[in-house]
Image 1 (spheres, rainbow, N blue to C red):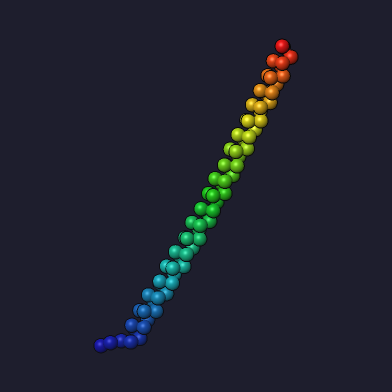
Image 2 (tube, one colour):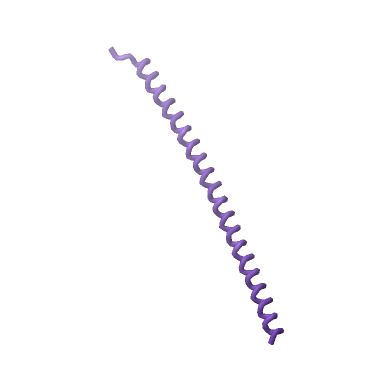
Length: 76
């Protein structure tokens, strides 16, 4: 015999289960997106820091060369 109430209950339970699964999936995607965003910020920050260090090194090298050039002109 076909029990419509049991069938409706089963469909309802399955639907609720799918909704919960989808909610958990969306939450995981949001958490993953948040982590990706954090990693992007870290990478950008490190890149900027490396670029700043390179600029400081180049400026220091320029100062040394300028100082050496001035000393060499004085020696002549």
